[in-house]
Image (cartoon, rainbow, N blue to C red; front, side):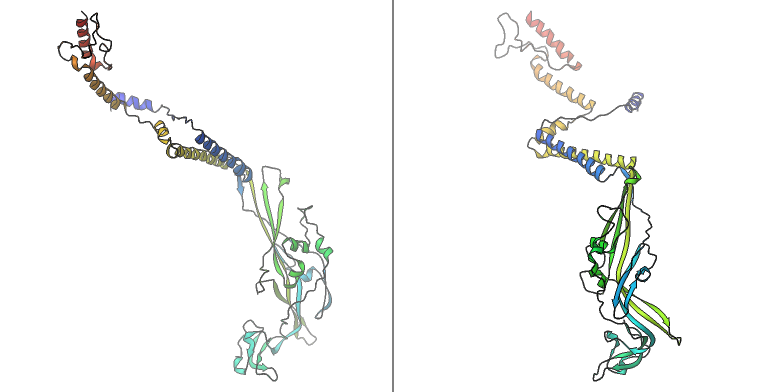
Amino acid sequence: MGQVDCKRLCLSLFDYKTEKYVVAKNKKVGLLYRLLQLSILLYLVLWVFLVKKSYQDTDTSLQSAVVTKVKGVAYTNTSELGERLWDVADYVIPPQGENVFFVVTNLIVTANQRQGICAEHEDIPDGICFQDNDCDAGVPVIAGHGVKTGRCLRVRNSTRGTCEIFAWCPVETNSNPTANVLDNKHFLKSCRFGPKSHYCPIFHLGSVLHWAGSSFQDMALKGGVIGIHIEWDCDLDKAASECHPHYYFNRLDNKETKSVSSGYNFRFARYYRDAAGVEFRNLMKAYGIRFDVIVNGKAGKFNIIPTIINVGSGVALMGAGAFFCDLVLIYIIKTGEFYRDKKYEEVRGREDRSLESKGEAMKQGLEEDEPLEGDLPLEQPRNSSWKQNGSLDPQILRPARSGLHEDATVNEKQRQILQTVET
């Protein structure tokens, strides 16, 4: 590589290259291009920035602590317990709730249970027997209440009976619960949290169930699970007072099917000792409403990095719109070949152009000057283009079209011949 080539290479580093644009006067394609630009611009401004707020740096890893507290009393009058007043120490389990707490709404009480020997309940399939061999001693009753002793206690005048077990006797009552809550419509409809006080954290139990799509009377009978959702969506570009919680309520257990998964209940016992020192207990199967408090949220604040990323994405979509319009312009419409020839121009190197021009010029010069080669006298054309004063027709005196230096000799020879003819 010579010194001149190295200099050209160094200077070419400072060249600036720009694109060549072709303006296509086509109203249909132009309208399509503007519609695409407008759609992309509206998507970028309305959806990306205003709705999604993609110019913000968002954090969804919310850390929160929820503390719940229940107040109030309840009154019951049942055959097992008689008249009784229940306060939060009786019907709220555990007493200090966090994000989950349980409110007892119904009870099945089996009073004065003592450890001893009694018959298994007849509704337990594994406890049914017909003879003593069906009750293996020391084997616990599956889904039952105790351990088999080896005896089958048959009902009088029947061949079917239940296995004798060592358990807390008498065994738990397996009757269906009955409703024990008065229909106090005033209490169910009056609440502190509502449309006019949407950010008050004090709720009435009946109102929460109503907002979840259930009624207190239905859930008090068999129990259930209610989800209390607290969602925070805070824009930290605004004042902190503008960040408010939003509450949503829904029922989590399957209320449509009557199966073991519907409702909610559990068992607990209270133990005592009589005067003789024998321990006994009251077993209670509690039906109630379990409340799960679920907190979700996110917070966003302006950040230049996501802003640049989303603006760059919008500019890239603009380029995609131009590319689509180019495809329509040069491949789909009828005059696409014309626009394609205008858009794509074939350019060759300087040396190739010089050789091609020289070859065409020489070929054209030979064709025009063929009668003037050598020292032959100039012949009169067949169409008799001579004038009366002996001068040549201007068409014959037309010089050669090639202006290259290589044709200078031929042009000089033509000039000398023409001067001789004029003389």
